[in-house]
Amino acid sequence: MRLPLLITAIACLSVNPLALADEVQVAVAANFTAPMQEIAQAFEQDTGHRVVAAFGSTGQLYAQISHGAPFEVFLAADATTPARIEQDGLAVTGTRFTYATGALVLWSADASLISDGEQLLRSGSFQHLAIANPKTAPYGLAATQVMQRLGLSAALADTLVEGQSIGQTYQFVASGNAELGFVALSQVYRNGEITTGSAWQLPADLYEPIHQDAVLLDKGADNPAAAALLSYLKSERAAAIIRGYGYGH
Amino acid sequence: MSLPLDAADLAAIWLTLKLAALTTVLLLLVGTPLAWWLAHTRSRLKGPIGALVALPLVLPPTVIGFYLLVAMGPNGPLGALTRQLGLGTLAFSFSGLVIGSVCYSMPFVVQPIQNAFEAIGKRPLEVAATLGASPLDRFFTVALPLARPGIITASVLGFAHTLGEFGVVLMIGGNIPERTRVVSVQIFNHVEAMDYASAHWLAGGVLVCSFLILLLLNRRGRPSVMPGTRA
Image (tube, rainbow over all chains, first blue to last red; front, side):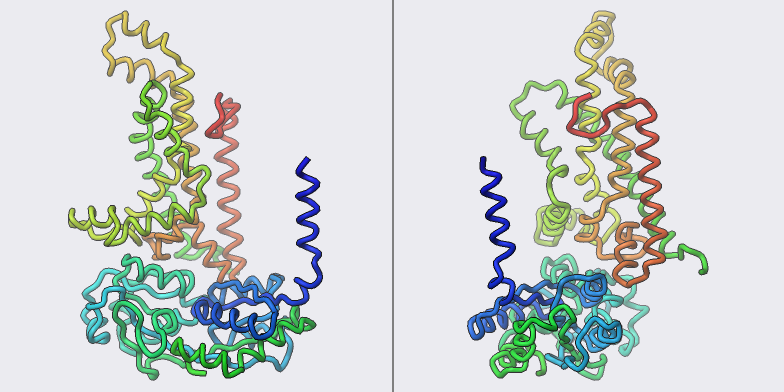
């Protein structure tokens, strides 16, 4: 009895043309989760378009996009992946731009653990140091650069635990299973200060700058909401949100 | 193409086999008495304990992994216990994976054994008792041999299910070579890094291996091997 009703309801939901036209599907690097949620809210208020966001490591999202995932906009955690997508012919040429410059931080949920971050790393007096998978997550790659430039790659190798994205890396540290880890500043920073635990904001010369690029994907080429989101990311309101999380903009 | 499997792949395979074997042995040790109790008790706790054992059949592995991660953390109950015992915390360690796998594969071992014990019924045990066999004697010389097919099914399913474990390991493992990077995680790594050739070799291996295990099980003449179904 109820089945026809259900089918009708599902059919109505899935063919509503208004909902489709106003919606933009965006793939977002995990480090940008919190600012994206805030920006999406502001964007929906200001333009009436709806944002549907999926979060993951840049490598994960790249694999999904190159296999036909229905994303229309891609906010990566680096500059190389969007460039590669453009080369693959899956993005609209000339739409790439840097929406944020990320910062890496050594962080612990324990408020008293990190006073001198470099010394702590050198002492090795911890069991687990969490990083993001360097093969798929740009913040993981940056973390390996830091350890390399400090000459600690070999010394720290046995303590490393890998999260599949910077989001999982944060979760390892936040739950205390890893005493400390390299996470994105945006995950632990709001309006000028570290929100919880203790942290060492790494000097910029210890890793390559993390320029995070956005690009319009082919699937969103004809969607006005996708173009609107990209230009909104350049707006002053979005910039203020992005800076609030510790990014350069 | 060079060697299809590199050292990291082989390490992952070895680790997975070790994990599955150890998990199966532990589950047989813990699961057999538990199955016996479930098959014979009239306690009110039978329902809740049975449901608890069956939970991993329906729970997403992420739920198990998430709670294990929280419980194993320094502030969690399990983490507090292991730290007091001087063992440190269990996340990101092989021991942690073993505990996770024991939880995750529990129903696949307990339920076939429980079914086997229930199928034996009371009569053989009562006959043995009248012949003077002690309760322990009855368990080891009557019940266990009669339940052998169920125990074999349980071992094979426990082993195979642990081979296929992914979500729990991903949540509590930390992707550490030779300690927590099992085959399923290694396949995920290959796919993520767009190394599809390596992913194919490993994934194909798991597919063939799992198929053969189930084929072997069915050829032993067990018509119904899935937990939750009564023979």
